[in-house]
Length: 615
Image 1 (cartoon, rainbow, N blue to C red):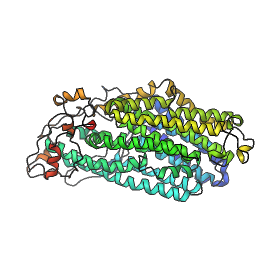
Image 2: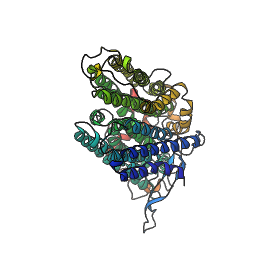
Image 3: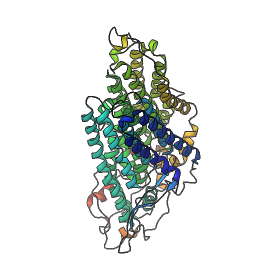
C-alpha cells in the first residue's frame, strides 16, 4: 500500500468537508484553508513526481501497463458458488509515466484557481471552495485509478462539483449551461460504462478463468488472446472491439470534446466562474483524451487501428479548423479562448491516433501544454473581467500602456498557445504532427493549417486588447489597475512550466517514454509505411507483448470447444480487417461450427481496401 497517493487524493476532499463546515460566515478562513489544502496537495504531487522512476521499454516488454506506487484493496467482491473466479472490484491506485504529469498539472492549476477566486467569489464562499477541493479529489482519482469501475466512479464524480460551480457561481445563463454540460457528458458516460462492462465480459467469454476489472490485467489478457493464433478468438475480438470502441467513443469524444460533440463547451466556459473555466479547460477536458489513451488504445487495438484512426483523425482535423474559424469570428474574449481550446485539443487527439511513438508522446505532452497555456488564458480573461466587467473585444483597447504586467502575461500565454519555438506548445504540436505525418500525411497537412489560423486569431486579439484604440467611454477609458501580487503568483508557475517544457522537454518525455513505446509497439504494423507493407506478411499480426496461447490452451478453448459457438456480433462492412490491412492473409473462418453469421466471415475474408488507410 502506498500511503502517499492515498493522502494526495483524499486530502483535498477532507479539506473541502472542513471548509464546508466552517460556513460562509468565515469566508476569510475558508479562503486560507483552501489555499493551504491546495498547496499541500501540490507538494505531495511534486514528491510523487520526484520519487517516480521512469520505466524503459525493456522493463515493460511483457506488460503494456505497469503502474508504480500501487495500492490494491478489495472494494467489492462476490464469490461464485460454482468455483468460478470471484467478481472483484478493487481500489487499485497507482501512477505511471502517462498520468504522472497530469497529476502535477491538476494540483498546480487548482492552486491557481484558488488564488484567482480570492476576490471574484464573494457569495457562499465556503461552499464554493468546498466544491473546488472536492473537484480536485475527483480529478486526481481519475488519473490514479487502474480499475475500470474505480476509473468510472471518479470520471463521473467530477461532473457533480463542476455542475454546482457553474450553476451557482456562473453567469446569467448558468442554469442552462450547467444543465447542458451535465446532460451531454452524463449521457455519453453511460454509454461508456456499457463499453467498460462489455470489455470485462468479453475477456471472460474467451477465458472463463479471468474475471477482473484491473486495467493492466485486462490489457495483457486481451493481447494474449489476440496472439493465441485461434481464428475464432480473433474473429470474436475484431467484432466485439468495434462495438466496445463505439461505446467508449461516445463518452470520451463528448468529454474532449471532438467535433461535432463540442456544442456544450463554449457556453459552459463563458458561463463558468474563472476557476471553473481554468479547471474545465486545463484538466477536465483531458479526461476524454486520457480515456482514449488509458483504455481504448491498450484494450481495443483492433478497433482503434481499423475504425479509430480514420474516425478520430478526421474529426480532429475538422475540429482544429472549425474551432479556429469560430475563434476568428468571436467578439467575446472568453468565447474566443473557448473555441481556441476546441481547436488545440484536436492536436492532442491527432497525435494520439498517429499510433506511433512520436505521435503518442506529442499528444500526451500536448495535453499538459494545453492545460498550462489555456489555463493561463482563462485566468487572464477572468482578471480583466474583474476590472472592466466586460469581455467584449470592441470595448477594450490600449491596455498595454495601462496594464504592463497583464500585457506581458497575455502575450506570453498567446505565444505559448500558438506554438512559438522555445515555448511548450511548439514541442507538443511538432511531435504530434510529425507522428501523424509518418502515418497519414494528409491529416498532418490539414491539421497544420490550424497553426496558421491559431496565430491569426490570437494575434488579432492581442492587437485589439493591448494596442487597439482606447474606447472613449466605458471602464476601459478610465485608469485600470494592473495585476497584483496574488494574481501574478497564480500565473508565474504556469509561465515557468511553459518555458521549462519549451526549452528542455526531455525530462518530461523521458518519464513517459517506456509507456509510450510499449503502447506504440501494439500498432507498429498498423502504422507501417508502404515499404514496410511489402514485408508485413512475414511479420506477426501484433507485437508480442503477452504470453501466447496455443489453440488448445485455456485462452482459446472456451470459444473453440465443440458445441460452443463464438459470440457473434454483426460488424458493419466499414470495419477494415486488421490482418488483411497488414498484407497477411486473414484467418479462414469457413467452419460454421466456429463462427455463425455470413456477415462476419465476409468481413474477415474481404481484401484490404486500397488507399491511405490501407497502409
